Amino acid sequence: MLADDHATVREGLKLIIGAQSDMEIVGEVGDGRAAIELAQKLLPDVVVMDVSMPGMNGLKATQKLNECCPEVKILALTRHKDDGYLQQVLRAGASGYVLKQSPPAELLHAIRAIGNGGKYLDPTVAGKVMGNFLEPPTLRRESKANLTDRETEVLRLIAWGYSNKEIAARLDLSVKTVEVHKANAMKKLGMNSRIDIVRYSVLQGWLEET
Image (cartoon, rainbow, N blue to C red; front, top):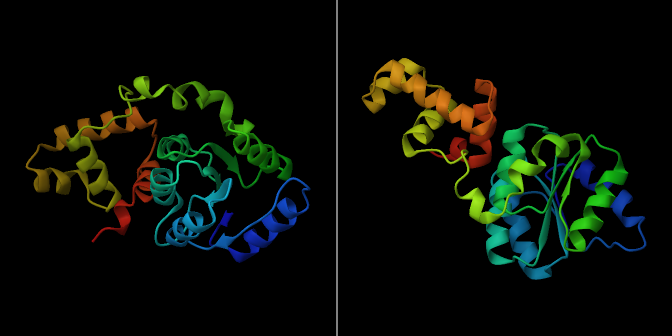
């Protein structure tokens, strides 16, 4: 099943996947909520899920689909190479991660791999992150990427556009303390810039909140 908000992308995927004798496209949708609804009805072997979709994004859809239909394997398809995206998608329950800019053969390898019960990471990102993000669950709970409540608050406000001084006033903290929380959170998540924080916030759904 295909889940991507761009019709042109879906058409391209249908041409690539439909040409394979061992694959069949059973459905397609353009947003996360529709992906959950249709997947629950069809129970496909694999959902090719775009990470960045309007409304409910691919991360949230992956989380919810993994909870209600764990037998459905999810392959994240994205143009983002960032560690932050990869980390969040895999923790949400995706079995594979492929870049849109990779050759079609990578997509097909990934579908076959997770369809047979395996995992698959695009070679472009696999080398540096395989060990960190595919840990056993018992180790993942102790991962340094677990943010404190205060670190989460600070990142959320940064993503919303507040300055360190404004955040300090809102949370009744010193500017220096805010900077420490920001630095600690960014280190845990492997971030290097405010852009990384915004991307992480998009995946978390923070920017959809009112």
